[in-house]
Amino acid sequence: MSVHDPDKNYDVILIDTSIFDGNGLRLEAGLLGKLRQFKKTNIDILLPDVIKNEIQSHLEKKIKVSRSSLEKSINDAGDHLFFDGSALNEAKKLLIDSNEIEQLAHSRLESFVNDTGALEIECNDYVSVGEILGQYFSNKPPFSETGKKKNEFPDAIILLAAEEWAKREEKSILAIAKDKDWKSYCENSLNIDYEEDFTAGLASFNAETAPFAFVENLTKQLEDDLAQSFITQVENGLESALDGFTPDQDAESQFYWEPDGSHGWFESFSFIDDTFRIIESDQEYLVLEAKTEITVGAEGEFSLSVHDSIDKDYVGLGSTSASTEATFESAILITICGDLTEGIDAIEIEQVEVVTPIRTIHFGTLELDYGEYD
Image (cartoon, rainbow, N blue to C red; front, side):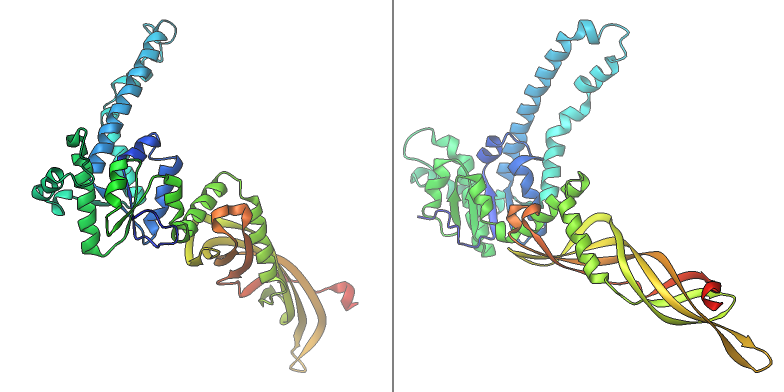
């Protein structure tokens, strides 16, 4: 029986229309929205044209129902909101008469394909009418021996095409569906396993998708100012990385000066953008690269002297110190440990590395410390 094996490494996920319907056709949110994480992985979301057409048809029906409900509500509110001369009439026209509504199902589905990196295939390229009819007359799954077998033709086309595609590509598929005909077919399939629980199916790909899901969640939380714990850990990592660093000294002065040593420390940082690159990862280990702007403080010691034109030598005037702040841009590498599937609060930042640390700091104009000189 070819059922879902949690320990198996699947190459492909195939999601039946029943799962899309069961999740309210909310392509941009919920579990369907989580499919975006597959785009940057080696896992393919297989989207046969039959399933895509079914989804679009179901979306169009749902949009029509929603539009009718909206139109009824607007008409019911007409006496008070959309009377003659109302400034809201333009909004009513935009909502009800917009051509965008007619194209909404298509545009949403195309956005879903782009956002998830779904791999589209034409079933006709992988299965023949003769093969389908052979299954039909032999009562082989997904065709049942009784009932309205004609309703099972789309399932047969999808599954036979997916089977042939997997065979040619040498891929293993996890099919997710709430459909007994899919289940019966997969029981004898060589390349397709069956799972009816969408959440359990997605969990099979956690090891592959966890880093990308983590990054997506991190980006969202940063945008919503909900990642303070993560930011604090990065700050602590930068404080350790930059503690006591010794920059080269630069300055201006009317006197001749020489550097006598310096030390610096971390002050603050900010992400230049919310783009994180995954450098290295496994299920409980992740290295991210991020672009940052870092501010450091520094203190430098300087010896001052003047040139004696008579003795042709330099006469020491004592020393002075100067403090300043400097800001520079650098990529940082953030090493994260913990179970990435548990979210941001469950991880620990083990190390933060500054890729291109500041090398030289300008300490401004140096003046003689008259108190020390006296």
